[in-house]
Amino acid sequence: MPVQMKKVSLLLGSGFSQPAEFPSANELSESLLDICNIKGDDSELPSHKEKVIFNKALLDFYISDKIRSESSFNYELFFDWYNDLRDQYLSSSDLFPDFCTKFRETTKVSEDDQHIYQDLFRFNGFFQQQIANRLWKDPSSISYSRYEEFTKFLKHLSDSKCEIHVHTLNHDLFFEGLSASSSMELCDGFEEAGSPYYGEVGNGTRRRLERFVDSFDHQMCLYKLHGSIDLYCYNFGNREFDMIKSPPHCGIWRLLKESVNKYGERSYHDNRMEYPVFLTGVKRKTRLYSHNLCFDKLFQRFDLNLSESDGLIICGYGFQDDGINQYLEGFIARENTVFCWINETDPRDVRPGLFERAQTRLFPIPKYLERVSFDELNRIVA
Image (cartoon, rainbow, N blue to C red):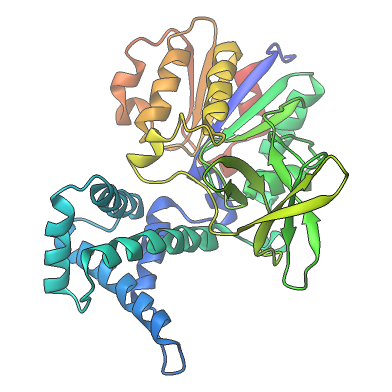
């Protein structure tokens, strides 16, 4: 049957990338526990050894004090926990000194409260970089063969002049690579033309970088709702904030912003590359959905796309994000739309309350994506 839909939205979770051997949330949590075992050697500077000792002490303290024997380590809950500690310090809460006292009693750390806060601030960048490192893959090592039926379906939608709006909660760059390998053009709201931002590599070479302009004018658009491992924030004196895209592992170590005065003279303001910007934490990420760095605009687009789409296809999402689920409720309550999920787990079992007001036509495909055929996918929109 011919495609009848004019606009289709997709929502992708971590399960979408797993057939390409990207880690699940549980696998990522297990992998991040390895940073507890990082050890220094005698040749390292004392300051680096102190950082290693603190990193291990913080994780060991959290595991022994916060995780019961029957529970497992969840990196997002851990992220929430140590960032809550930072907030307690900034708000002068009595809880932070209490933590510091207990922390000193049970670890080898002997720093005062202020230094512990500074170490928490530094640890946050270290931890987010560790997450990013585990989500990056050399594009030449990725196989897209398990996605042939899925890309065939996307091309069919494209050939039928259907708008395709892909919303992903993943920080990895898999979908970008998948679209490039299949010669599917997409836009992600970033542009290089006219950008005043440059990245500098070790030898002084400068490369112009894309910055977020909130422009989505292609037939296929990609929205990285939770950020990405290739996104960095340019922060100039806490007055200017822009989201910049920098290719991972290309040697760029600092950001530069070019300005031109009335005489045509160019100057550059630098901003050291800190760590990639992406949203994580079970609770903390939902608080930043309205952050004006770019996430507020991305979620406004998400809301608009859901309100205008004829169909919504969800793949690899476990319905655990209450903020995302609120957006989905509005779509499910609409009439004359199609709601499909591709997963072995039925979301009506996981989040039954989400479907209480369902008016849309539910279309479950209880399979992993790599086992779904083009014909099964095409029935959703035909």
